[in-house]
Image 1: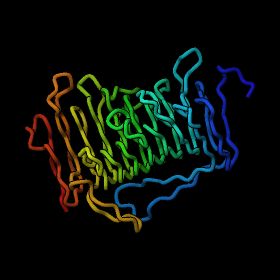
Image 2: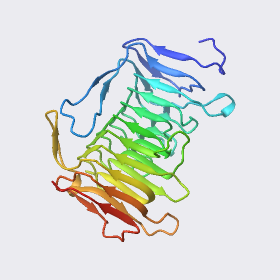
Image 3: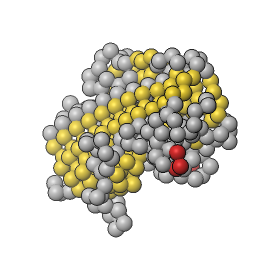
Length: 322
């Protein structure tokens, strides 16, 4: 449109539109990218723990074969940008081997008050969301990390370096980690619960369903609660359903693991029947595992690995194996 770049704009795609981007799209501060037709949602009727929603969108933004990231918001003059995405499918980020490529949205220049509602993030070569910022509600992350070279680096449905909130979302069938906060998971204004992952359905991801890694006492914190976590870590790396690695200050509670059937769909147990792994690599350049509280989860026959460490390092209690 004809607005100056410094003017916040609402970009509305027509219903059933498929827009193929020939270059990375760069929204600016205050911009919104939405579909004219709102998303619709399906939710399991037999909710036992989580009210996760599976969105169906009616507009698609796809990168062509040369687009490294489909969206990369940046404020005017290189400042940060608060952006809202709603009701669209984003696909086609191409991984070049660089850790900043291969995503639907590269969010390193976005603010922590940005928001995502009812979007589908799928079929990207490295990460669905890279450098995630803000809040993710009723989002579907699926079939990301299609290039195996991104595994262990950025391969995930969502990778953050700052605390974000992910809620009521459907995270499944990604070859890397489902949701991942790494590199100190820095404190974020407006996120008092830290890396807050709650009320999601997290299933059938190749590595950990949820991973919290490399976070010391000067970094952020995590609250992972009320999620359904099943069928994860089927790849070569044993991560369990939820993985905490070289990290501090996390609470993992009221999640359900093991083999279950939800709304007629069977979800297998997490690989090797491991619900949660809390581990310390012993590397001098990474934080010691400390102040990890694991409580009141429903294991359904699965196990917690590494909880033989002293209570001053890892606190585990009130686990159910029913």
